[in-house]
Image (tube, rainbow, N blue to C red; front, side, top):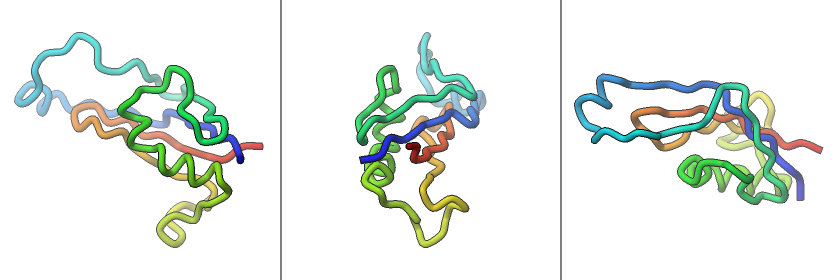
Length: 100
């Protein structure tokens, strides 16, 4: 199996939705743009957010097994995927790529 690098590409924050719908929470996300993680053999990297991992795990495992070309040519690099976590208030976009 291959390893995959998971890189935080962008982070968004929707304060209008937070104010209207979310109960106040003190700590939501530790990610930073440019931060990267390595998934070894399709496993969750240490310190990866559980919710973010749930959003991307199937893609990481498929890439780790040598698959790719999701949705018939979605990505320019067929051995990669761009996935966002499922936080509707603070979505984080991750680039997942296979590495040697």
